[in-house]
Image 1 (cartoon, protein in one colour):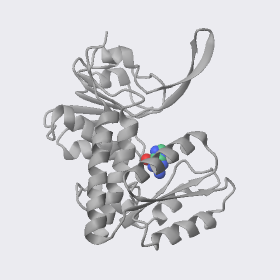
Image 2 (tube, protein in one colour):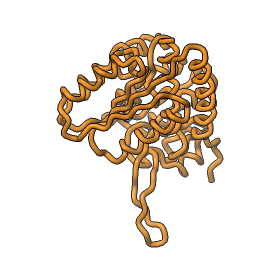
Image 3 (tube, protein in one colour):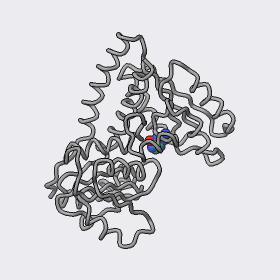
Image 4 (tube, protein in one colour):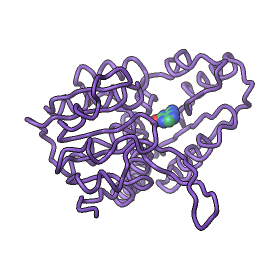
Length: 294
Ligand code: GUN
């Protein structure tokens, strides 16, 4: 049976969202600047549609100016770049997010790098990546998922992770690499693992902080988890399960929750862990951008 603390990302995100709403009202009253978030989605990917809807709903709840641009699947590179250019120059927009993945005919890197760094609330522009990697967190936008993970880790272990081993499974630009930069900045000893890592379970068992961000359902088993570790599950995987003879869809993480919770000191659930924190960090970055403008 689970004896780990369940890290309630949904409740943490709700508290942060309240604080952002209050700060937004103060900003509007003091300066007349209303934080503006523009989300661009290209095509019909169902998971992306859900994420974008949630981002728009949260932005509105925080009192932001919120715009969504839905472009058709067959949009040209020039059409997407032209929209990004318009948003770069729109003074009502403080944050621009182009939802990934983009359809395969589009050049994802050229599009994310076309967003001006000052409105890059995803933190994907090379200028923001460079500042994060160099440890200059004040001026940079930090990618939302690792930023949210970091707050949950801090809640459990404090801000100084000196002497602790952090193991990240997954080397993506969106999660793995920026997560490593944040953990390093907090003085953790960081290992990044990936598909070519030898004896992954043994490396994972060395982790006081284990972050799973690979996109494979329930990959991390109970015997990969060091007793007492803080386990952060970034995965969102849809699997089919049989309930009373019926096949149903279920969301699960990259961690086998029941097994890991029996070993961990604290663990994030899926859903209700990293997901809500990611969205609220996007609001936090957008508000920060608006505050800089004001
Ligand atoms: N797709 C999955 N996660 C993200 C994210 O954090 N930002 C963007 N733009 N697209 C994503």
